[in-house]
Image 1: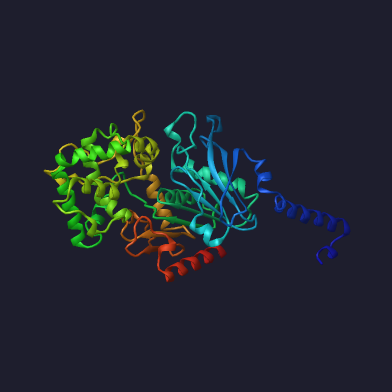
Image 2: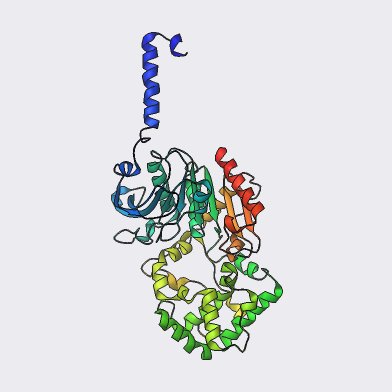
Length: 433
């Protein structure tokens, strides 16, 4: 109808213009994912077997700048898992905080039955430059990695984009949208802390009040007992560690490692919820039972050399801009013989000086309480990391949901059915905005 009101020549030009618009929108409508990938800087494409609803799942390595502000610094290869379902459907980008060692279907992708991309975090797993320059491991560079992925794949998936991540991956989700607020239509961070300093003291207040007083007292009694009996327990600790091939040179020796594991016990008990208070051994329990229980709750590998080397990028990020926690050594005066520092300084790379900058955390907190929208935050009520959960203030453009008595394993699927339905409804509302 509009064309009929225009001179013939102008109508032809408008018709051509409209065709060009639609052809650009649908450029990849009839192109397969593998054909699309041939035009991207990807390599080492592998087809994975899976019995999910996806048509195909690919592992690829995507070329990223080491420094997004200066490509002359070189590039590295970032591992992605791409799960293709339908190019007209939404895409869930899983912003991993660590390595991506295997493919899985995230909750949002499973709920929405849509496409998914898992992005391994820079400097972890296979996504490392040939030489490590710690200056380029920060929230902005990682957010720019995710932005580059979305920018590239939006040509093939022009619909809605959802970002999600768990724990440090949830932090990555938040930081990504802080720097690139227009990239995603919905964000779902799980159990993501927003700390306020290197050693966030809110952790200590939380541990003094979580659960019942009876359970907290039982945990403290167990820790004191383990420290008091360490001469007896250390040989069993060593035998257990030898079987697992755990060594403790970086932390400062097996005696320090043992005491750190005892200090970690209360944090891990509430964080993971792997044991109940009734499972805590009594003061006269045999050494092998105590050691087995401690490992089940806290995990001795946390202080082992192999773990620290693998997760050194995490400790670097924590002590440079993301914050972490420590141990209140005063609570164990008279019990500690070897540990004299309640921080994780021992885990940091030795070849670089680290100065903590809290500007990211301050700015992100202001952002979350102000302009942040279309977030669904998931937390566990008893998870130690909920001590530093996001505070939205008066921002009612996003939502926070807690699993009652939940741990760091809190997910939508293990919440009560009514709350699950409320979360799913909120997801659709935010996507419709």
